[in-house]
Image (cartoon, rainbow, N blue to C red; front, side):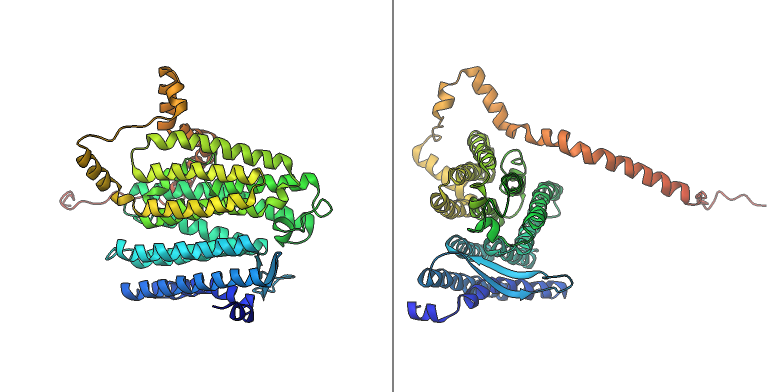
Length: 456
């Protein structure tokens, strides 16, 4: 498209096409699934390819048009969905260079994964279900990227979380996959609760749910006081920590590898794990008014990067090793955001997402390639140790190895501190429920066995 054509097409139309194409795909595939009439694989693949391509082209055109027409964040509104209360749920998008670029990156990666998944999941029993969840995920990611108010952001945040958990449990015949999906969903609930609390507090203090108060120049001491800005920022950091697997919520990340390799690539290698980083990046103006929250974000990012750097070196499978390697870079991206390096952080985010996508999609071939290299060398590949490990004493090395091997003992710590608080009352309520059911039901008479009857 030429610059003249791009400027003649309204930005509102381009953004609507970019977000609407995956929504339309979700509606078509979802309706077919509800009617129990799954489309043929070639039709599903073609529809997904057309939708992702249309979304990518429209969002790239919107990014170029935005750059040609001017600078500064722009709020695009498409009206309210609901009028049951004042204002309703307005479909609003806040577009700027970061949001449009991240949305275009999302569509591009989703299109690549869609094409890869078509062959990878060929003749798989859950083929159609996978593409329904993929379209649900892409819709949620685009809403998170372009959200102009809290309602749109929270809807997208929830769609990303639900689709993530369902894809972790994609092979639902495996008990481990279902159990790990519940783990992921439990951590996401903590993240969602923090996000919802920040939204309610923003609405209460500012009288508006517009994200321009947090993501734009509207953030000021006159609008949100220093203490309130700190509280909202801390809640956002908790939400980001849960979604991006920062400490102390890092234990769910290797559990999420139970899903298919394409979903691991798009979720925990390239897009989903960066959604929290992107949210924190857009909330940088809020962090300017909350120095304590900025320090907290930097500390979480740094400790997560160090922890993941040690842990990734002792993982026994490729996908878990790549997941913790991704987490190392995510921690560094959070540090960059805390330091105020917004452009560097976004470039790091985009480059890392593309690089990890390639690594995850090629993960099934890693062992084959490694065996080929070792055959050519005639020996095993040499191991590598970092400078800190080489300087450490043998006793310290054993301790570091144990901590890394057990993934920081985060699972057991969360089970004792958080899980027990909910599991024990649940067991007690289950016992009470069984006792009440047993007390209310009539006494069962023993079954009569033929042959035991006595003749009269």
